[in-house]
Amino acid sequence: MWIIFFIAGVIVGGAIAILRPKKKSCGKLRVVYSDDQVNPYIFLELSTGIENILDQKDILLQVDREAYTSHK
Image (cartoon, rainbow, N blue to C red; front, side, top):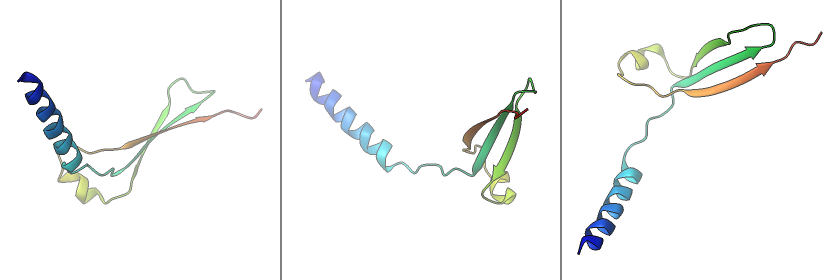
């Protein structure tokens, strides 16, 4: 009997995860590493206006890591 509830729970949970609206990314967080700097530089690149971000409690950003080497 418990196996039926388990399978039903997996099916219902999967359906909720698929149908739940996904958050859309509102920009990129670029992390730039350099040879001559100890700490990385961090840049925020927004793809939407600041008005859309101020109204939300949580936002989703894509992280883009870049490494620049000096050419001496």
